[in-house]
Amino acid sequence: MNRLTKISFLTVLACVITLLLGLAVFFGYSLYRDATYRLTILENRLNELKSAPFPPIHVREGALRISTTDRPTTANAIEYRLTFGTNSEQNFKDFIGKEPGHIVNAWVSEWNPRSEMAKFEEFKVVPDWGTANYTIVAKPYPNESIAMDFHVTFICQ
Image (tube, rainbow, N blue to C red; front, side, top):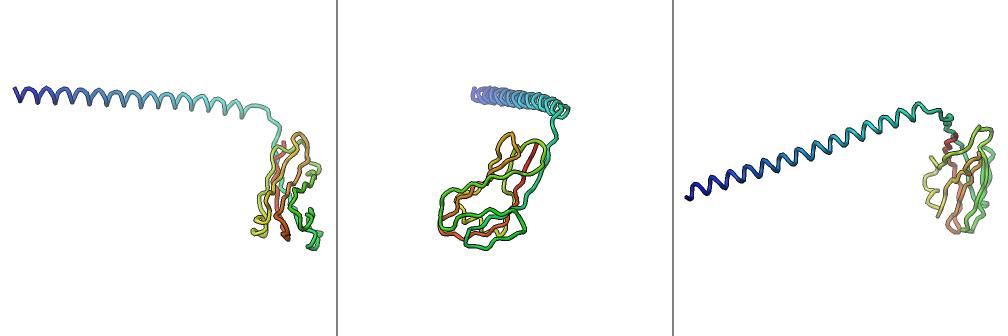
């Protein structure tokens, strides 16, 4: 009787393991099938977007300079002057020139010297949606002397 119990137990265990393995394979295949279906849908959407008539996108880069009033000015680039000794937010509005269309996005892409960015509590470029205008928002820490060259990347549509 003891031998019959062991054989029965091993048979039931083998059936349960086979059933669990079958369920794992079934769920794995279901996930794979669902992923390929989603991939097909995404490829179709991508092809629709590629064939849609969108206006051209232009990437422009501007070389700018920002400095505090205690530093000398330079005539090499567009320069924005911060009031020395204050830590209030200062805004500088400007435009990117004869670019057709409007600015979609803009950001500071490079600055030199690298240590100058640490002197700002806030420093960003905010595009005015629908126009070729942008605003430089600068909030330096108090009593920081700043002289920084930076590049702004614009995506225009």
